[in-house]
Length: 507
Image (cartoon, rainbow, N blue to C red):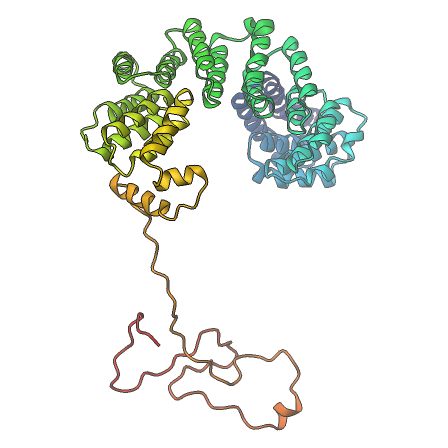
């Protein structure tokens, strides 16, 4: 009998080792995952959460009745949910939300379930965490407020979303609140919040989408000013690569808005900041693109092409190769006919986005081919590209092409021949029209056949009970088997000796 207490002590020690080796490891991995989340390192965080889920699951499976089973079940669900495996997290989290006795564990399970609901674009997460927003624990209360804000933002309630984000202390809450304020049209409040955020700390992952939102809501110039303020206050905390990417994205926004000189200045900043990096090479190529938009002559493009060729030799990026191809189409065009010249002018305007050079090419085309039916179109196109030459261009249209469909359309007059002229121009330039399928006006169908085709929905009437019998089905027609609905159309037999009808035969 003296051996029994000793055996119990050994078993207790073994169970304690289970906790030490299993649950302790799972909790340590979860702690590392939360730290990675705080740093904004999503990849590492997901890896830690996945490993924590595996460790916790082993405790649940091996010791389902131990006092660590419920914490392990919740941690397993949290790990699966936050590692991106929400499809597998639903079972342990649902069981934990229903069965665990601890309020803290139940709230953790509910929060993880709500995260999965939001990951599937489900606004029902609001109802799931409604009680947790009043939790006695400040951390879980903050997380519930953040998730409620995300759910409100998901359905477009940006004002309430901003208020819920304001009640959360999560690191992602202030940037999310600024984004919601911008979407709600409250740009001054959002910009004030961004100024405060710039003084606290900077994470590239937060600021890149925020600056896009600022540009969308308040314009690219405001986004540039916000970035300047950010870099002036906290730029030294950002690695050079992060600063370069933010500046490069800002240049792209300015270029897309037609602010080529400002975009060129941003690209030059990137080159000075990190000349030997991939971002620096991309900025150099984009700088060549900016200079191309300001080209005044074909000779300018020739010089820029030579400059680009050196960049392609050192760093053949996709942007560099695409711009080189564009230069080749513009400068190496072999077609000297009027269609080819007109196409080159359009390419310079639409793809190279060099308005002044495109305008000069259009005017040159009209001067070289004054009898062409496209000469007035070229002059009309030049009107929007050369505003200083508007009077002379309008005079040329009135003097030589007053009856042209393009001149009439410019004046707002009726121009019945405009569509025909555009169609002729498209064929001359080699643009193929979309081939539309031939409309089918007639469809061959068998005439309706009277008689029952399935179970009736209404009770039989007197006429049906005592009236004449239904007409028999045509000879040779397929009949439904007993107990089977006749879902297929009836097939009419073809008369003997008559060939099968073609699908295009008329009725």
